[in-house]
Length: 358
Image 1 (tube, rainbow, N blue to C red):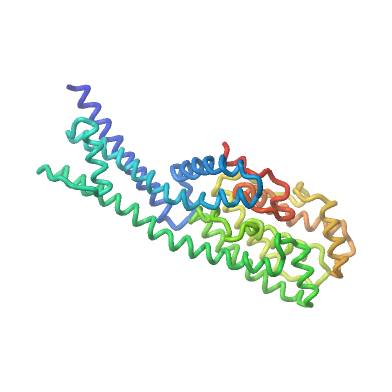
Image 2: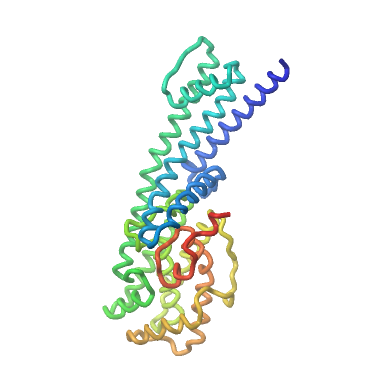
């Protein structure tokens, strides 16, 4: 008798703790307006990603892999409240068993009926009825949170994709530094680059806020498989770094500000996903872009008529000094999201993110 009573007490306490932990997980994921990584949500995302990777690895082309992963974020969003409801049901099963509902299968049946609001049976016990009502309310709240969460996600997604789409007009497909600067130069509008740096500074600021508070956005893929927020960010940052370091035009401090806004945003997103990186890199630290690749881009820009600074060695040091601020996090995020091909971003990465396989 004592052993049975102790078991019920332990089950009841464990049930209350599980319900509380699940509610905190939902609040941190859906309600808290700041970057607050949650272990339970992280486990759901990582588990579903492994399942989708199995399908994606069987694809022969990038388009097929992109199609396979397109459902990853939406499916995970739907899976989250299902997992939460399941844990709530398990937690309340322990509570009902503690309150005298036997056998345990009957406690589980009562919990499922209460959480899903499939039915309610009053047995005259006021306290038990209150507990049943509380579980029903929690179930409805979790579903309501998801429904209210979706408009915010798709609104932020739409704002993100607007500039990503416009970048194709300015930088081609896949986007590249050469194409972007060449087009502006051919049109005689190099001075308009300042306006673009302003637009992308604001874009980076919103990217940081939305992709940490609404982290699932990082995995929502662009409507077109050849576009990606990661590759767009990389090309804009490289173009700004080239203009500041190598292109012989009047210095525009807005390009510097854009680069800083960009690498701060990418670092904070990387921090949210627990991607290791050096928070204080030195200008002479190695980067993934080689001097030969840099010189090749310079030759192509010169062939397009774009004036470049005479001291190529200094230009390389200046470019590398800017690139080192975002090089590691850019490549890691491209791998994490399985970004499409783009020069100096996803062209030097494995297809699948090792970060998710740990």
